[in-house]
Structure formats: structure tokens, C-alpha cells
Image 1 (cartoon, rainbow, N blue to C red):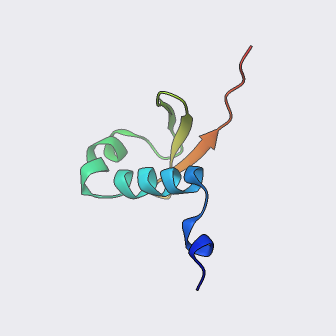
Image 2 (cartoon, helix red, strand yellow):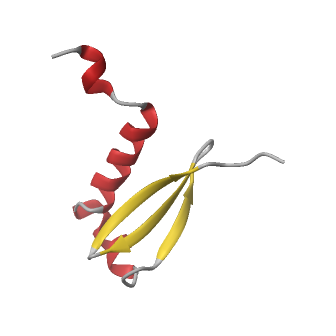
Length: 68
């Protein structure tokens, strides 16, 4: 087992963390407030994510930000 094989990119790690959080007990209120198929954009200091409720679960996608 290699060290690099377990790391993944930092974007992947962040997506996994947000997905785990939103689908866990702490994110229950957020998920319950969304209708099926509804989404919102989550902005951090340097990244943006789209969170969509699909099949009762939160699906988190990284959004590429374009600088004008």
C-alpha cells in the first residue's frame, strides 16, 4: 500500500468531508430543508461547491471559479 495511493487530491478530501458532514447527524437539518433535486452553492474563502439533494442524500460537487 503506497502513501500516495491513500491521499487523493485535497479537493477530493474536501468533497468527502462535506458529503460526510451533510449526510450525517450534524447536516440533517440542512438536508431536511431541501426538496429532492434542489441545490445550493456553498462558498468558502477560495472554493465553491454545489450541494444537491439526490435520492434523499447530499451530493457535493466542486465548482470551478472563473476570475474575470
